[in-house]
Length: 548
Image (cartoon, rainbow, N blue to C red; front, side, top):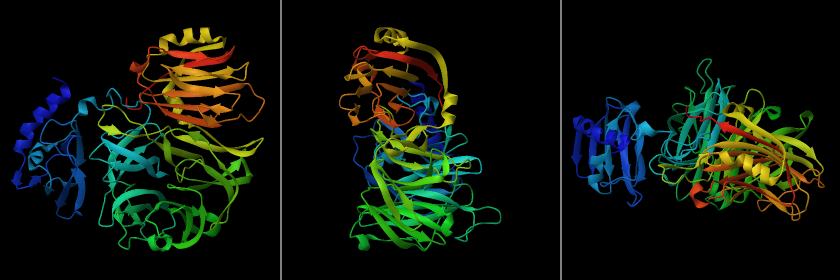
């Protein structure tokens, strides 16, 4: 019997000692522990569950609660209810209610972060589904990562805002969920700001309000709301005047979501970029509560971003960048009310990275982004992940300014160089890498020189990490041409985690994201191929875990 199974069985006496009353499909629990643990089976149908406690808003979710053997366990942090009575009603099989139990640890805590398919240097939630990053923000020594979260299943539903904090963008501490579904809907994506000037009137003394702007989504409409926190995002109070924008009728569309808010210094006002139907709209506000529509840019879908970057580091030569969830972007000008595209659309990445957002308020001025990895982790009680945090910059190229995207400098602390070679043939490089093929996590840096206009690259167990076709200018089936169009060389910085691979090509000119093919699918290890290619440089790094 596995240790975590033993822990679950040992918890039964704890459950029996709790105040526990069954009334039809309803139980009352006197909360004495930090967590409630729920048994989940993907074979069960979702049914409505309602949580009620004095002084707390009613919470309605759907859940695949099982009375039989669970596929996995999920949890609810109820530490804020200690000493109170929580009533749970359920419209499914009432026998499943008897399997809910209280404990000061989540079920499976003994193996947490050590699971077979747990990514080791990417953020994942302890349990449940995650998608879009939300409210990315730096404040008072902490980076805040809010994110779309279903705490009760590893598939999409019950959208909350999950919450994690970090001091270095690498090591994350997961906190209780920050925003919960309410009468206006479930909590879709959004952003967060620090209201230093107290424009909304919620600051207390020297403590500025952390204000979240989010979408409340119901089947009928999607509206925009705001909430504020005075304890660094640990708890939020929703604005009683929500929604602050309700634009369904204006656009004849339910698709009005994902507010990105920032302070526009030249105009001394707030800007909201909001996806509405077929593109991104601009709204202005003086107080974060009353918003006025200004303009609209078509051609984008979901999760808008708008920010300014210097070209080649020159503060006198800047461009504004607008992008959407897919990562395609336009360059242009912005006057606080209207974005005017001057070039684009371009791509800086390909693969299952989506809904990337940049951090607000970073004190050193870097434009740091993080994106949702649409990647599964077979056999795990969680799904989805955040890809590595990366820094954006604009570089002048032969074709004009383009976005560069590279892992933040803080990432370097995780990787230690263990071997390095120069000027190898494919056979020599493959032999050098043979001992590293079975590693669960790894980083490789390589520089390949081609001698013919045919494809060349690097495989891992048959999966193409790099597949560069110079004849058709394709990189893993995406169009790619280096800044020097006559170049016969390509470089790659490759990050291999348990379930994902990220490849940063030519110092960030293009990014490849892919799920990792299971090792069991192919006997082949690392394998360079190509017609008379030379591996000019090859370096291997061991990877530390962010969970240690």
